[in-house]
Length: 77
Image (cartoon, rainbow, N blue to C red; front, side, top):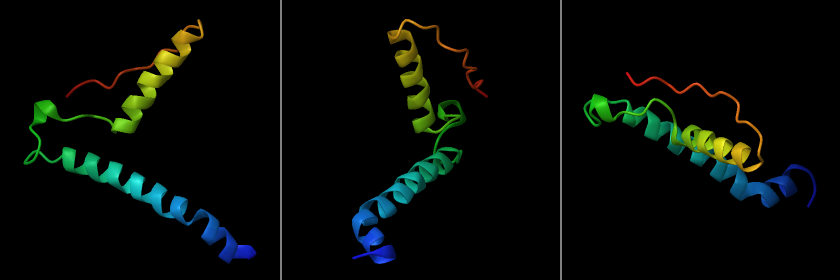
């Protein structure tokens, strides 16, 4: 199999799963901004993947002995 058919057969799971994961995270974020579902004081200002990336970056840069760059936190509303 060559060309497009071979590419789709080899990467079909990735082609489906990456947009699905992005869509689920975006959906969570949109639902979380709805005040009828989540009280204002419990709402998050950023996606969970962004929060996890910030924590990982801080942990990674400190583990190497370097100084972590300044990361401005999103102010709670």
